[in-house]
Every structure is written in structure tokens, then in C-alpha cells.
Amino acid sequence: MAQEPLSKTEVEAVASLAKLTLQPEEAASMTEQLAKIFDLVNTLAEVDTTGVKPTYSPSDVQNVLRADVAVDAQQATALLANAPEREGDLIKVPAIIDEGADK
Amino acid sequence: MTVPNFETTIGLEVHIELKTQSKAMSPAPAEYGAQPNQKTNVIDWGYPGVLPQANQGALEYGMMAATALHASVTRDLHWDRKNYFYPDNPKAYQITQQETPIGREGWLEIEVDGEKKRVGITELHVEEDAGKNTHGTDGYSYVDLNRQGTPLIEIVGAPDLHSPEEAYAYLEALREAIQFTGISDVKMQEGSMRVDANISIRPVGSDQYGTKVELKNLNSFNYVRKGLAFEEERQAKIYLAGGTVRQQTRRYDEATGGTILMREKETADDYRYFPEPDLAPIKVSDEWVDEVAQRLPKSAPERRAHYVGTLGLEPYDAKVLTQTLAMSDFFDATVAAGANPKRAANYLMGDVNAYLNEKQVDLEDTQLTPAHLAAMINLIEDGTISTKMAKRVFTAITEGKDPIAFVEEKGLKQLSDPKDLQPIIDQVLDANEQSVIDFHGGKDRAVGYLIGQIMKVTHGNANPSVVNQLLMTALQARKPE
Image (cartoon, rainbow over all chains, first blue to last red; front, side, top):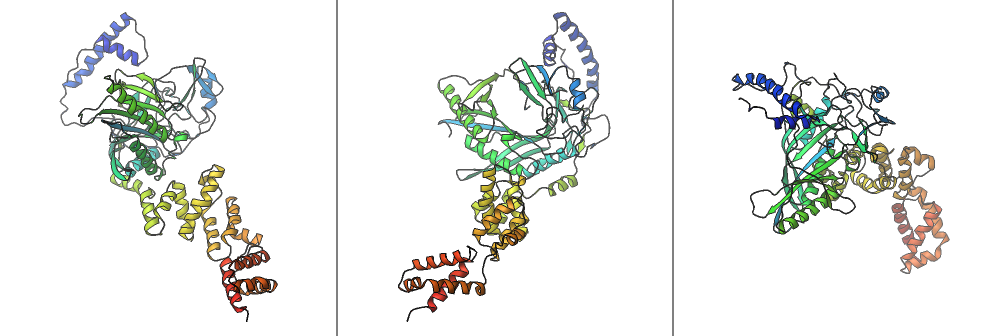
């Protein structure tokens, strides 16, 4: 299945999802570079995959699960020391309203 | 209440927090009430290079929920990433089961106005919760990641509900079904059960759904019902005025009972789902499903059938006893400890519930034990104590005291032996000749007075039914010539 050529609008949409602001010339060069990556990946589309199950993992390993046992890492002090800003034990970040939560 | 000439369509999405020891993808403790960020590790913070470690317990709880909701358990599982940026989600994606939900095509039975109906459940996902974000008034948000990574199941209901009352009944049925699996506390007020609702209305007979509106901030079943009823009316007014309902997310306002616009959606959210490369796929065998299903406690309807059918309780009592899993388990254990089921039921529904309400505690947080309650009930049954004395014994067992030891210590033994009671009765009758004459003169009141006197002498410890019997015999024997 060949892909449509990548449009600048799509690149801008992806940039916005990634919270990136692209200058017009950056958008143009990104479109070009991403298009090349797409072309490369598209060579895979030449393989006939009729009847082939999707591969969700490159390894044959299955059912790697951890027993439900809690381990208190006691790392909070070190983790909070690495936070860009903090207020007491809370991480302080610029307010972002009206997204997230209960996805 | 549905609006005339319109048909309402409601679909509910419910998130339920699982009571596992550790988080879904990290071994950090899944605990509440700790100081902010104390129950976190590098995985929860999304540090570079860390790898998720899927929790078998969370997955099995998902299998239990699927089984309890009559859904089929998916055998070929893999995890997916749902990508979005938000401060409460440090690694910028949530691990979920978009493509292979743990359960598919379940159902629940609901009853509204005496009519039973099956409501579909489209699918169930096991996934991670986000952290907690508190917005300050100072342009900053404050993030606590203790909740980040705690396991959830998301239960996507089919759009089979046609009134706010049906939505309410569905939530009650869902809470009961999940609570009796033991995998979650399912408490709205504590956030271990959370509800989002989608609602649209359309003219009766239309074959196309109306534009749906999503409702958030529904923090109780009652708010769900009120918010949906408000939306039905709001949307109907718009249609009747010739307008169009816009696709919106609206927030329920607890103060007014109305809904307030949060945001308008022009396009669907783009979460760029893809298979999670850091976790191995999972193959679920029949044996595994069976083994997990066997760990499921009996469901509430099964318990009610047993209480009514085998133990001879009234259906209403059976309903009350199955309000919570803890109450039902406590009742079962009390009966298993040898208590008379009817008396055990009456104590749980009466004195125990009153005690829980008064102290505002859950049964599992008290010092009451089934063994103590059963022992107390047996003391009543064998006549050792009266139900009146049992009030004091009940207070003692709420303090964790052994009822048998307490009764001995306080000398609370009821006088039931005629050998002990007969002399007392004779003594009281000797002292109250006038009452004996009154009785034979047809004044029944005299009996009550005499019993009162006997109780006074025995400090209330006489067995009333034995006293009654002995007294009547003694009175007949003293019939005046």
C-alpha cells in the first residue's frame, strides 16, 4: 500500500501534537526529510503480507509479567531534587488548563 | 424523565481503580494518602531509559472484571501507547489496551420501574492512571505523581441507555458487580470509580443519532442523573428552537445542577496509538482464565438467592446485606460461626449499621468480628442473656471484647432456671397480695406490675418468658377460694 506524499499541513499537525513550533523554513525542510523517511519505510509495502499476522514485538518472548508486589523505592528526595521547580513535595509546572486527565 | 417526542441515547465510560499492591507498570506502591510524590520511582517519572514492568495482578483483575461483566476474555493481548502531553503524564503516553481490550461484549442487567433490561458493555481495558494536577491561581500547576501508574480498568458501555434513570441503574449494577469481585473499592467519593457520560437526543423515529455531548465532573451517581436530565432538556430546547447541538465537552455544575461548556471539539483527538514496543505480548490460556475465574467471590445475585432460598431471609433483607461485599462476607462468616441467620441479619442491618453510621466508619475498619457477633447471638439463643442485655454486650464487641468473657465478668447471666426464679416469684406474690386479688378480679394490668416487681428484684436479669410462664402458674395456684 503506497502512501500519499506527505503534506506540509500534516507536518504542522504532527508538530503541534508534539508541542513544537516550526518556523516556515523549518516546516519545509522537515516535510522534505520526513518524506524521505516515509519513502524508505514504504519499501516495506512492496512485500505481500496477505495472511501474515501483525508483529507486535520483534522478539518471541511472551507473558513477561511482574508479580504484584510493592517495592517502595524511597527515591522521592532524589526525584524531587531533579524537578525543574518544586513547591514543597509537589512538582511546580506552568499551568496547562483543559486537556489531559481521565484519558 | 425523557423529553416528549425525543429519544435519548446515553453511553457511559467508567474508570475503576484497582486495589493492587503495586502500580500497573512499576513496582511502586499503589497507595493513597501519602505525602505528594513519595510513592513514586523513576518509572513513574518517565526517566529516560526506564522500562515498564507489567503487573500480573492488574491484568488478572481485568480478567476478573471481564468475567464478572459476562464479557469474553481476549486471548491474544498486546499493550498500546496513547500519546498526549500533560504534566500529570510524565512519559507523554499512557499504556493501555486500545487494540486488544482484556474483555469484549459483556452485559449487565438493570431494572427500572420494575422492568428488567440487559445493557451492553462494549469493552474493558486495563490501563494506567495519570498523576494529580492541581491548578494554582498563580499561573502554575502542582503535580503529585503518587497516582501516576496506578492500574485502572476502563469500562466502555454500549449506547443502550435511554434515560438518566437507566444510567443510574446501570451504574448501581456496575458498582455492585465490580465490588463483589473484590478488585476495587468502587467509591465515587474517593475517586476509585469515575464516570464520564455521552448523551445525545434525536426525534423519535429518526434513524440517525443526534450530536453527542460529553459530560464531565460527575462526582456522584446522583450528579450523573441530574446532569443527564439537564442535558436532555437543554438539547431538546435547542432542537425545538430550530438550532443545532454542537459537539462539546461540558462540565456538571454541582451548585446549579446544570452543565457548563468546557470546550468544543472540531476534530477527534489524535492520540497516535501504536503497539507498546517495551512490553511483550501476552497469550492468555484457557487454564489461566479458569484459574482466575475460580478466585472470584460469589456475585451479589448468587448471594441473595442463597440468603432467601437456603437461609430463609426476606428478599429485602438479602438486598440490604448485599449492599457491600464486606457486609455480605461478614454475614456469611457469622452464619458459618454458628449464628442463627435471621438474628445475624437483624443485628447487621440494625445495631451494626447504626453503629457504622454513627461512627462514620466501614465495617472492615471496626473491631467487630463475625466470631464475636456469632457468640453473642448464641448467648441470646441459649437464654444466657436477654436481648436487652445484649445491648451492653454489643457495645463490648464493638470494642473488640470477647462476649463470653464479658458476660461472665459483668455477671450478665440471665436467670432462666425455674429453681432460681420460683422463690423470687413466690416472695413477690407474698408481698403483693392485693395484685393477686386484682388479677383474679379480671385486672390484667396486675400481671405487668408483678413482672416489674420481679425484674426489680432480679435487677432485670430474669428471663421474661420463663418469668411469665412461672408467674401465670403461680397466680392460678393462688386463686382465692
